[in-house]
Length: 237
Image (cartoon, rainbow, N blue to C red):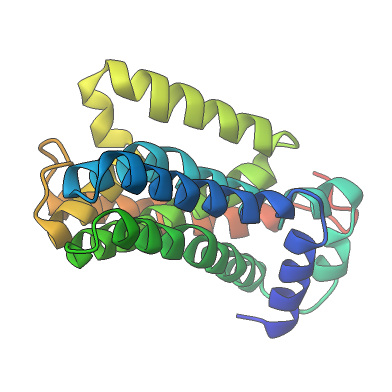
């Protein structure tokens, strides 16, 4: 990890307008949690519904998408990536440093709000909130690695990422049960299930889910660093 690249990454994320959305999403999640608590009561079932259907399915991947694509894609588009590529720094060090920022955003703007929302709706079930927070961090890290790869493969990483989330994770995932074997959201649910003992993972084994998350995180990180090697100093192929 390179501290200078981390600082540049933080400036890149929060120095653009899209960074505002990182603050909006957790506010919406916590606000809805408060509304559910007031209108429907403090129950574990209500917490599961909000944390699973809004948190894991929408907030977590969007936070990862906004944070990660704000790290690499704009720099590649405007050519400022050449500053980093000109330095005697390993391409994988660049990627890892960027991902540290992205995962930090997932922790602050997704995992912690999930914890707060869970405790807000079901204060008597802290393990439930903790499980969703841990599942969020695991799934969010996988999303960040995947979106980092998209950022170096296409100039339209945000659009492609949104299509992936809306079509594959949400639409197709709700229609075809077999998608659970290839869904980061479903793998995250397995982590939640292992911590909370709540049946939300729909038959996926923990060994498979954890292995799949690890493959996506390590594989996408490696491929992103390898892809950066093919860029010249103008940031183009």
